[in-house]
Image (cartoon, rainbow over all chains, first blue to last red; front, side, top):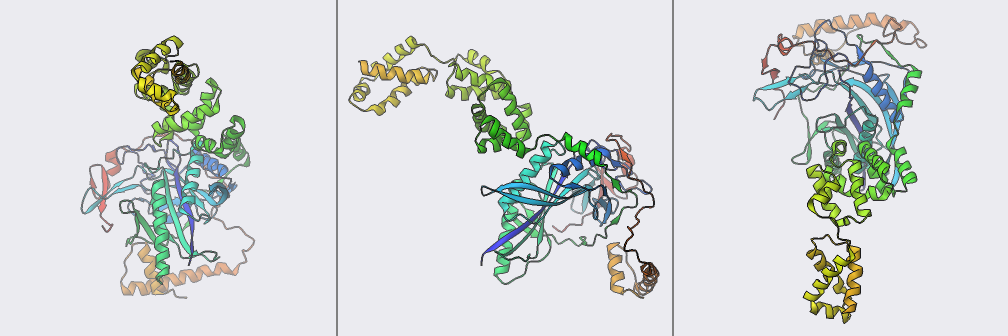
Length: 477
Length: 96
């Protein structure tokens, strides 16, 4: 039987506020344990939470960017469970009446557009961090993260493959970073993903029993964890078994998911409205102001790049996937007006140097100004395209400008006709045999001669000129 | 009205409370009485009334996003029954 997967993702994104959601402690990552805490986030008796305005604003920004409806009135609720990373014994979250509902994102799936509906985006607080490795018998608790503002973005189960899940996640991350509400750093846990996965016979309308795969923290692991989990559930069904509704964790070393059987785990959260927090009334005017302030989103920018710069869709997609790369590209065009040439440089050389850390482009030593300076040196014949690649690497490692490197290293292209003719004569002199074979019709030998000339000039000879002159000279003798 | 001992046991477990058999008996009776009293509310038709979670018609106050340090590390850990090198410590609870 053929099966299909049904996947819904719950993404937690940390909001880029300076202070926590309900108290004034710092949200900074990597601080000394328990130095960013106060009676409120430690859950001391008698304290009251007060909502951070910026956290609310960022959550609304995210909701609007994901095409959600922002509710004029929403409420906070307590999610009750005991766990040592949760000092109050409950997490302040939203349950009934979330901040926003009914959004959607469009993703590309096998070349066509697919709509992933978003059920809700709500605000909540993060829990602390537990470290189990320090001791055999004790777990260590750091509550700096307790109370850091999160939004939870819950998709409908509209995703049917691990590829689509990763595409959706990348798109969501890109949008959150475009609108500046989340730094998207999955390693530091600023973006975390839980997946609800079930499988069913292809074409069936009924949903199978789902398992929740928790805390998968990189695109690669999401892909692997989902692939494994889908395979596992199919083989359970095929061998006549039943999929259990349970929480599973992903072991990235072995590439498998395994059941999280913790005796402390209770799935009865007894949500109720938090009496310490009044309802959140969001003024429609404020929502409109926030909507107005949203930057151009990736989809719109992609279309614009295709139209305005006549880029192939493939280029436009890569360039707009990250806000920083898109801005870098447009900055280059202020200095140089051939979009496709700039695009080629960014997609190959620049992105290769960034090694997947697209945001690093902001501090990249080859600034838009310097990159375009380099490209102009090719255009005016100062250096060849091949030498330019070396100059580029040199610019990355030395942080120097192209012109400076070219003059320092004496790698200016030889475009002087007379000089090239002398070198070519010498090369032909030394390779009489090949020259006569060329004249006898083995025209392929031209490549050999070009290579010899390049060798003799350390690659500095203008390739076009070498080619032309060689053909002429070889015929002459 | 009486609620089952199992229900009492379940709620107690969620609250990390442990009761003896006679206590379970007593609580199932008492909790039942409380719920029965609450049942009185069902005598009123509230279909068209919004639930009242707060008596104030106010929106939650908002704070500006400004960091203000409050406790030192020592103060934060002062009341902790167990601590180690700047951490709260708890008996290990995950199974390896």
